Length: 242
Image 1 (cartoon, rainbow, N blue to C red):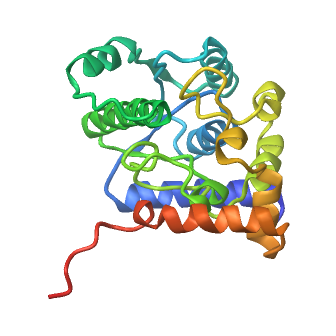
Image 2: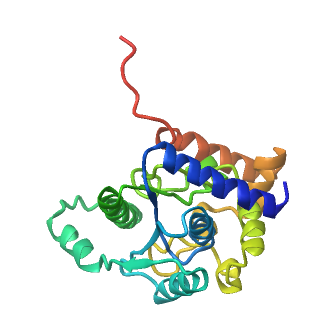
């Protein structure tokens, strides 16, 4: 399917899902990254009068906020900025600390940021009777590269069947600003963090494996380990069978 037809079908799909749920529009987090920018462009096409982007910095890279604002201006997307720095800091003051290894502390704090954003999105959605639109793509969903009850805490995932390179192709068709398309993908969870460095594989290798089943043995094993370790993130909570 060419990018133009895909963009049209996805916008129609978003509109159908929102209206079928009895809701009026779409709210999404605008991080300044390619995925959220593509979703924002699709949402404003589906709901020109009822799309809202939330920019939610939390000790974030200022450049990400700038990119989100540029995107919003180019596509005339209404936004609200909710700075989460203080609430995040206050949470850390009252949450228990167990002094585990540094990497686990970093992960817990990064996930807290994602979950604060989820709370903010749903608080807004509830007031407006909107659905929360997520930006997770097939590449990330395959290996569980998302925060459980954080950026996965959404109502629909329009990009869920698209690998990263397909998202880039769609972004180019939609005329997303080149600076957003070309920058290293990052969840912006800590200084210098990038998706590929954290995953330990490139999106190119991951996409190729998803689409063809082919990859160097080391890459294949890493992807399968990540997939196995994230099964609990991709399913509803299990209940006993008795």
